[in-house]
Length: 128
Image (tube, rainbow, N blue to C red; front, side):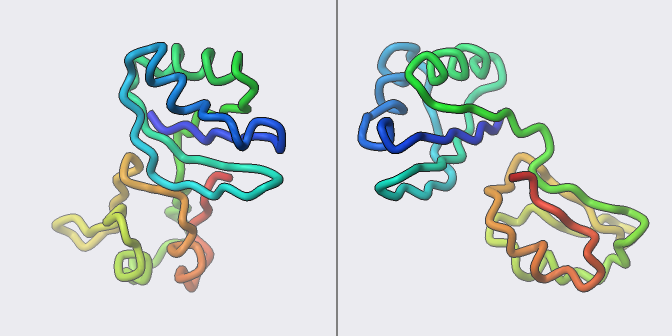
């Protein structure tokens, strides 16, 4: 399960992710991170069965946690299956099925937003 973790200025210098891994034993995959002196945002992936434990512990340590059910939102009515998103996605979230209809693998998305910028019909949005 993907979790978007935000840290305040006070918490950005603390090793919250490392502490959660050590305390819970849950392995956390950091997929994307932006850390600055005033704030931090990290996209992590954890096993579904451990998501609740990780969320609770991170919140106890002062981080804000948002569960991402659908990282990329796809509007079927706007999409013309042009493939612009396929070519720019670094994580291979998008592909075509046998009938050349666009398909998405939500679990691969790292919220980079390249697909949104590339879509000529505005059929894609990224959850932030």
